[in-house]
Length: 130
Image (cartoon, rainbow, N blue to C red):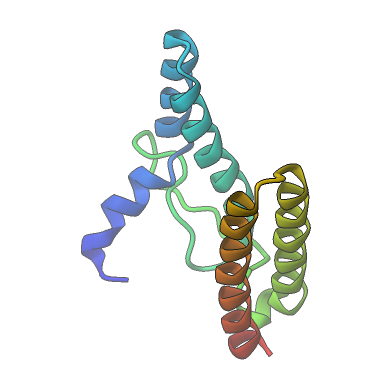
């Protein structure tokens, strides 16, 4: 990515920024803000250990330090041949769990579409990783 995108990535991947949004949501008792910030923090928490040489400054604005993980979700030299299928299986399992919770065919169709999009991403990983 170009250097122009780095500030966007710093803000979007900051534990501190999303932690502040979570605190705001809890203070305001906003389920929407709590869910959104909680989802972002979950993503960042899972993302943090899976970037070898392409990580983000997760503690921005206090620090621009970037953790260099020994693992990568896409770089086969950093265990991606193990990580990518594991991540794909986790997405499949969680999608099936969500799919089973909804009984409406419309909701199930939406989650089936979401799974199809994830399978498309996983297909790309397999083409790149293997």
